Amino acid sequence: MRLPAPCGPLSEGVVETLRARPAGPHAVPEPRAMGDVTYPLTDRDFQLALWILYELHYRGFEDVEDPGAEWDPLLMVSRAALERTFEHAVRRLVGEASQDAPALADLGDTPAAQVTAALVRMTARSGPSEVAQFLHRRATREEFRAYLAERAVYHLRESDPQSFVLPRIGGAAKVALAELQYDEYGGGRPDRLHQALFARALASLDLPTDLAPYVERATGATLASVNLMSLFALNRRLRGAAMGHLAAFEATSSLPCERILRGARRLDLPEAVQDYYDEHVEADAVHEQLAIRGICAALVEDEPDLAPDVVLGATACLAVDGLAGEVLLDGWHGRRDARAAG
Amino acid sequence: MSERRVVVTDCPGGPLLVRGADEVVGVDGSTARVERAVVAVCRCGRSDRMPWCDDSHRDRRRKTKP
Image 1 (cartoon, each protein chain N blue to C red):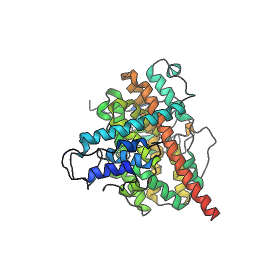
Image 2 (cartoon, rainbow over the protein chains, first blue to last red):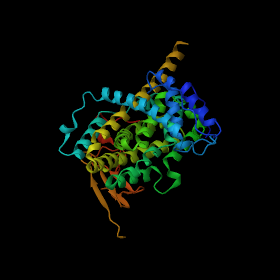
Image 3 (cartoon, rainbow over the protein chains, first blue to last red):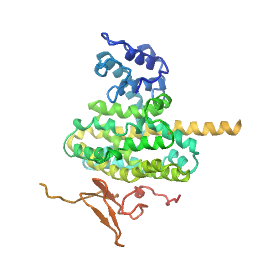
Image 4 (cartoon, chains in turn orange, green):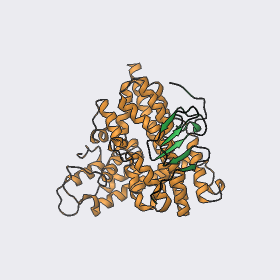
């Protein structure tokens, strides 16, 4: 993949730095530009800059010549500055979202019971998302394609962030995470790798299967929902939040996937599209139990101090993904309104 | 250690997680092959994918059909 086109001062700073030939320390993005970010969770330039820096830890960019860019000290400083602003915004959003949430201590006798109850409670309230209902009942073929294109930024890297957490946790939680990831990574069958299933779904709709074009078009909120997983997974101190995020993600996936599958059938979309969502109805019903009971409960049994972080991660997942969903719906409704008016 | 064990884990309010099984047999004698390392077997009877859990136990509304 090549570096995506920047879209503002922060992503320009990062891209310019990475394009420069390896020669000593790189410049960091202008701290002044950070002051211009009013709402980082939807700011495309901000999220793109952070996404590019995170991508250095995944598959990287073919046009970045410096093989040491991943751990370049000044790029790390740059990433940390962006992360601080991002994490602050996430914590604020979580604070707003959890005003009515009961105290953990009131939910059970042990940290494991408290966390299990909190995760079940917060994910039980969410039915199939509005996005899933729209895809089920209303979306046109073009809108469905646009949805896949928007989600490609995540699904082409599906489950990769959480793999960074494996060496950071131990015991039963590690075993359960490995079990979940084994399923995500195809259960021993390369043709069932979930990332590959999604790529096949894209190809069946004549959409590209490389990530670059999607990154260049994804909204700031979609990039934020992906960056959130990297923020949690690449910072060991946030491992509890990474696993809480995973639990909330998996627990709110089966029912929407079933709706999206029905939408794909309604539109008679290719088998590969149906296959992707079909696989996720059953898989995520399993993963939900593994993530809540196998991973999160075991993790806080091992490390009780992580209980609030697990809940933080789960709340952040629902809030930030909810934000990305709203942006997507606004876009669809806006275009429909414009067509009706025009 | 090489002895294979089938392990069933209770998930209160949810399915049974089953590890190590080859197939699940329904009351009508139909068999469902186990295709993944861990499967979730429905207990609430609301699944559209019996015997597998499809998370319908979470959906408190009436079931919708395509």
